Image 1 (tube, rainbow, N blue to C red):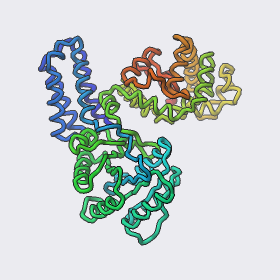
Image 2: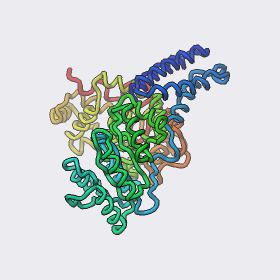
Image 3: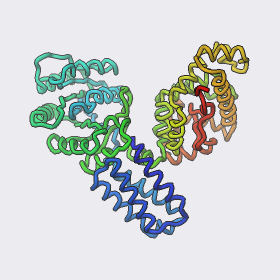
Image 4: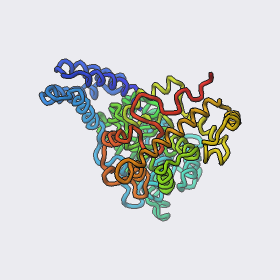
Length: 500
């Protein structure tokens, strides 16, 4: 999401921040490049034009041109303006579902990912908000649409309304409303039918359903890959039905992100969630400040921390922390770290959220390094005996040959892995001794402790968290081996798995 735009803007601002002083012409030249970058990212022309005007007005003032770091000041102004363009009212992830049973109407065109998004959102409401959810498919036209929602419901552990052949969408809506009231459900979600394009029959049916259930939220699901078409669809649905928010799907496949930047400005409706993959947990709240940080290559440390919190058990992390403080870091620990990285989206997923990692991500891609490397390293560890994993120092030539052969790798790959394990063990030991109570202890507890994030970290923005990471030698805690802010590849990965 936003890779193309982020790359272009990073280039513009890299040149801008290297200059000691900026003239108004320098700023205007840079902003012309920003406008071209926005248009190439499929941002609508009026939105791009208004954005540049707002930035130029603030960026050509005396406060900037006389600033000690004018380039950075301009970047900050662009960052703040991006947030302004993207921001809606209130918390985007907080739905109006206080009074039970609360109806949520899911609308959109066919093929936008509406049914899958309904399942994802149901899972989120059940697991994050503790809600009892009922799903109901109103799509009586698309073959197996109702069965698809039933399968998704079973997959995420949420009830679905039994299918009664021959019912109209209006009749199903009434039955869902009754079932939700009698069954003690907190929320019932209605997955309406879609069409390949907007037509009168589609709109009339959705209007009828809306009038029957009076939804608390009407969420429009649109395919982010369609760019400005998604914005036009949102305008049309809002004028005919009235929507409360937008869910953009397939944003993991859109390097431009123009729909996200145009949606709020053109429709006046907030983006509530973004779909970033097919898995049922691949739904993120659309946080304007974090998205702006990603666009400008500042990373999204907050999202990274939250992903880590969701994938690592607190008690497990406490045990790890005690071991690391003693300098105990064996192959079992390394395997756990590597698996953790894969769960958190692999190298690419993690790097997209870490400050300054855009260039390093490209470097790794060019070197042929991807999640396959992590799996190869795990395969090497799996080829070891329990004794060898616990005490990697006993690995001599004959054992190394056996392990390499068992995993289909080379002995040289195993040697790199052993070096990586030693380096990480040394790093963990040093971090455990740094500062009052140990920097490692504070970092691990902050990210994974039972109490969640401590008060002094909870309100920190990505820049503050980045600074905290740099204080720890450029390495982030909690299972991110060697992911420093520099251009060097993570230890043990350079050249790993390459055939000689």
